[in-house]
Length: 632
Image (tube, rainbow, N blue to C red; front, top):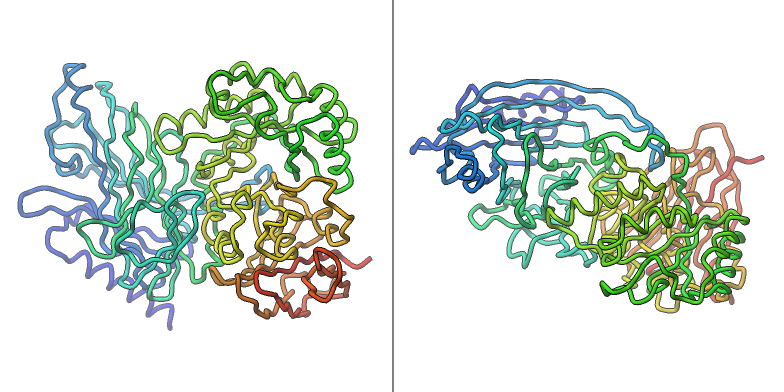
């Protein structure tokens, strides 16, 4: 009965909105998610001056998520039109004279297997609708509003079919709106490596990063995200200057397009809890095109340590440590080829006291691969030269440093550089302000990216338990986890557990640490055993900025990480995700202030099953890690 009432309420809610003055009824279309919980309605309205605009609404189980919001994109093609002797468009708003042409509907339900990921299988299941328009003033200009409704949320983009006269398109603004229920708050950060704050929808000092989780006043959660941003300018989110409780997209700059092309997807994820947003983040991957790399045998996820002495002796010590700690890679960070922040350096030459050939050979003998950091200047100047050279050297991957991010120019440059690395069988880690939007599906040699405030800045525990619900919804992040550095602001068990909570198929461990700092701490067994890719991922419990417990399965083993904020707390950890009837050995790594060791992490080994409930007593800024393996 409750479900029927919810459907009736949803229909009444939609009908009320559409009964407003000015709606062009023939344009009205409603799309539902496969489970019928989400309803999205798109329609066109005309004002008293005869000008038109396109709007949409979204609801979940009868509750409003997005109130009436405009879909608007602004073009200025007059220079191309003049140059090609075409009719010049003189509309003030590009969408104001769009004539509705028709609607096409479609659906998809397939399952695909990623090369690696948080899950071994991903379902791509949605209902779709394309609304076609043409400009009344020039029928050569056409536009489609493309909408997909998933169980996880709604995705919308603008698509420009081929212009028969060949006019080039200059997008000057994209003003997609998200009008939200009164009382909604957003988890805001000004830049990709910034701190987060929960803010009302008013008085933001600057545009906010994506993904952006939203706490709705009606109890729901939403998250605004961007997908397939590969040939466009980055969008962030600003507060509308004219409409209350409304967020709007803001492009980094202009976009120069050649039809046919589509904009990135504007994604509205919806869930009943913040943890479900994390579990549903495959929607970002699904909105990207499938893998374009034919042979992927060389793409190998793994754990990596940074070597900082930049000497042959230090490199060999790091490789030996990697073998001991089951790490697959060693990274040589910047300055191995000389000053990195100048055009005058040469990334084909080893300037540090390192014999690269000897180091690569030493690592190969021991099953450890080598990664090299290269800064933007050398990447931009020498990409066509250094990538084939590094392949010849036997290098496994390149870490892009200090990349420019945001503009159309630098977006396309990064994507082309990733493709060039793929052509040379090199994996990639993009650092600094760049964040992925699902490109790992198309080019899985892109292993991870920064765009996160990690242990380079040594954030506190409250920040750390905000990240899974914010940055990590957008995809793998290279937090650069540490263990021995004295600047760490959390307990050591907190650092251990990050490897399970934070997803990155190239997981950096021991970022500021050197092998000589280790005293064979027994709890490092957890990092020795943990993989970096998963068959299954569950968010067991969590509240954004307070705590989280994440369980991930690889094969038959499970790895569970629990983090708390700056505040200590006691949590119950249910193991009901385990298969029934099978007993496991639970290896529990937890903070123990009574120990005399430097790291003060104790190990407890007990037998558990799916009915077990563990008590986790977490110190302030603490954590707990668990390795579960079937009892032999």
